[in-house]
Length: 464
Ligand SMILES: [Zn+2]
Image (cartoon, rainbow, N blue to C red; front, top):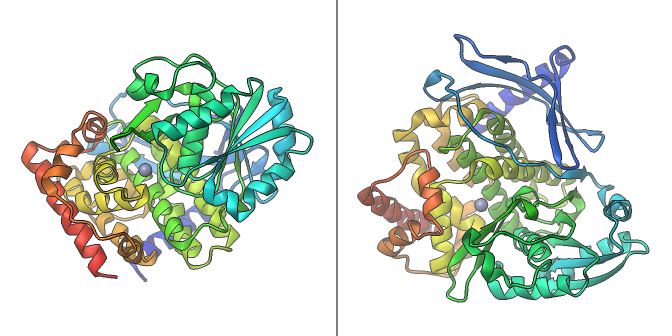
């Protein structure tokens, strides 16, 4: 049995134990409209300096398989007092019947009209038509987002559609690009300025429309984050951030992901793993965010190979939707790290898809991260019931189990320039991810990481 499967078997056993003995000590995490409430978390803050969490998650009345027992030791095996804040959690409705709730959800927002912001590929699969049917009597207009990641121009076009319907709810349907576009359009469309005015938090937002997110990929976590990643006319990847962009309602319908192509399933699913790992190992890691990150990593390893092997496996699809959601909540509070700095650099310079780029970035950085900041991987070690030094092996087993090399092999040939990557890693839009990484590189270390990135690119392509 591989390290990963043995760790998962052990985790499952642990969860089973937890499920049969949780009645006395369980606490309930209810993800409901705009609040994340917790019952008493059984915690021990003593000489053992650990926290034991035994949580049952209920999302919109449905008991989820998100029951886990977590024993997290803080870095250095010692809990230190930390200051942090968790974001809101949207009302979330999950399962194959999720779409049945849509008309009622819209009625609850008070909106009389809907603007559907739809991924171009999803518009062609017919899923957008299913959403339109689920609207019932609610009138709507459909705005199709062009293929590729959001740009200033594509976001402004979507914002114009929102601006034309002042009483509308905005419904994002698609992958991270469509959801980011919908979130951003719902906010920008409430004012007169274009998105240029809000890049890198240059100005506060002036309003918002109600937002419903229906993800059709499982990885970005865009349905639970308060940011939008978009490119300017020069191809630079920039971002915006604001609480106004958090969706009010998320529908996690596993059937929405069934038509996702294999390579997209693998790349986006790996992105969720990178999110969870970077969130729980970065400078802003905290105990409450480590819990969903740990569960997200377990869910990815449990379900991503199955979703890649058979896209119609709805149990695997739902497991990955839950993983992406949980990892998204973790990065919303903790941010990402150097794999995302490298990934965004690769996206800006060579237009690699986000999931592919950050996975290559993590492959390049993971050994250096773990070697120099081993304690930061305590939570990840808990996830797989292994030691922190085994985490790089866990990642590479996951690459094998999801045929990641074949995904990299699909990418057009590119001649990667290490010095250009090293420079892009500390561009103003990428520097915060470097600064949040568990280990902050010197200039020469950053150059070495960029060279390792080029090596990873070639090695992964050759191994197809
Ligand atoms: Zn990501």
